Length: 107
Image (cartoon, rainbow, N blue to C red; front, side, top):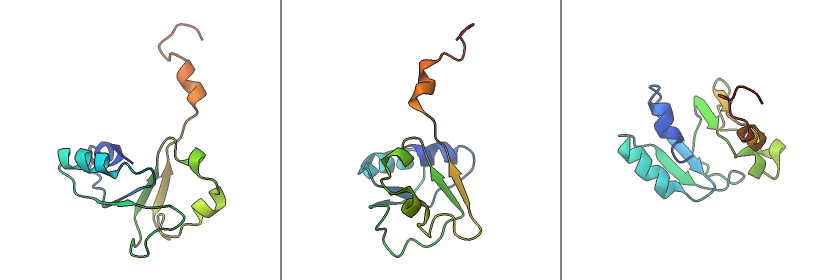
């Protein structure tokens, strides 16, 4: 989560909620403040979220999140994620891709 809300805000998206399972919400608060944003930042276990989160229009899962989830079916059953009409965006990659230089003449 840290930094994600600031990158999305450059596209005109104003984050309202960030959930941090890794305990880095202090960094996220600093980045949000620097970007002039004030999202609600919650440190919580994704499998045991506070009941007052409500629904969101857009949920973003960034690089490195999915591999830390011990129960992916339960992770995707979390009902607040994007609600009935919202959108779930997953931005994921594999570290192996970092071995290649996209500007190189050959692989």
